Structures are given as C-alpha cells and as structure tokens.
Image 1 (cartoon, helix red, strand yellow):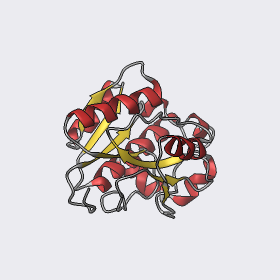
Image 2 (cartoon, one colour; image 1 turned 45 degrees about the vertical axis):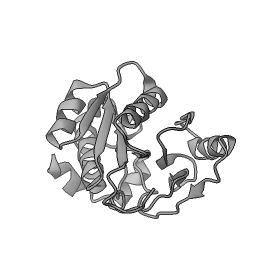
Image 3 (tube, helix red, strand yellow; image 1 turned 135 degrees about the vertical axis):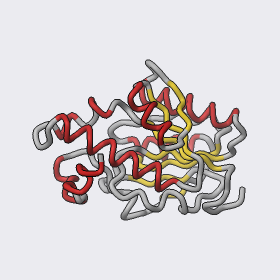
Image 4 (tube, helix red, strand yellow; image 1 turned 90 degrees about the horizontal axis):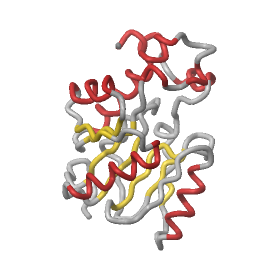
Length: 199
C-alpha cells in the first residue's frame, strides 16, 4: 500500500463513548459539565486532525452520533458491543467498504495533529501512550483477524497479538500522540480553559 496523507485506502476509526459518562477519574477535578465539554473538544480535534483521511466513529450514544455527523464523520452504530467488540465491528465495516488499512485513534488524544500525515506501512504499527501501557493509535490491515485487547496494559498485549499473527510490529514513538487524558495530572498537557471554551 502506498503511504501518505492523501491515501484514501486508509481510514481512521475513532471509538467514542458518551461524553457525559467519559473520564470518571477526572470527576474530582472537573465538574460533570466540564468533563463533557472537554471530551467533546478533544474528540473534535481528533477528527479534524485525521483529515484528509476519511473518519468513522464507532459509538452507542445518540448525542455522540449526532455530533459525529455534524463533523462529516461516518457513524458506525455499535450498541452493547463494549470497546473491543465495537472496534472489531468498525474494522470489519471499513473492510467491507473497501478500505485496506485502518488507524484506530482514541478521542482523548491531547495533541492529535499528526494523525492525518503519520506514515504507516502495510503491517501493524502501534503508538503507545506516555506510560507504555495503553494503545493510543493502532494501524493495521483491515483483513486480519486481530484480537483487540484495549484496557490496562493493551500496548504489550497488542504487540503480542501482532506477533501471533506473524507481523513484526512497528512501534512509533510520537511525543504528541503519546499524550492522552486519563488521569488528573494529564490535564497539565492541555490549555484547559481554551478547550472548555470551544464547546
């Protein structure tokens, strides 16, 4: 597969849960309204950063679906799947639409600007989070039976899964894409007042 930001055979898949229920670990430092605004603002930036690659959002929340449509993203409705099942269903849907490669990026990336231009090969590429624990971006062919294993420790589990399938996975060390928002201290990487004013 050719590389590059204009390659329309690569789609970006963004799993997004309800903004209202996201990031419970931040509830002691942000109000419910602030958490909702923050997560909507971050996810909006992720979708914008993925351009010009086409974007699909997997979700089971009507408000998220409406928001995604206003941004021009395709909505893949995945009720009661859980994160791993929703991602699997989303990848299968993109494969059926003719996409050869998918980049799975989470909606809580603090600095997603590289998503639209990051070069990926034909195999499996992983961008770990700043703690080398989670998987912030995972790129892979859509036609492989990859077992998605998101959750604590997913970076190492996804590496092992790629090897199990016969790939030599590429680890992409991106200081920007490694930053996601999980814990209160992660908020220090953001211009929080500006983000809360965006939505």
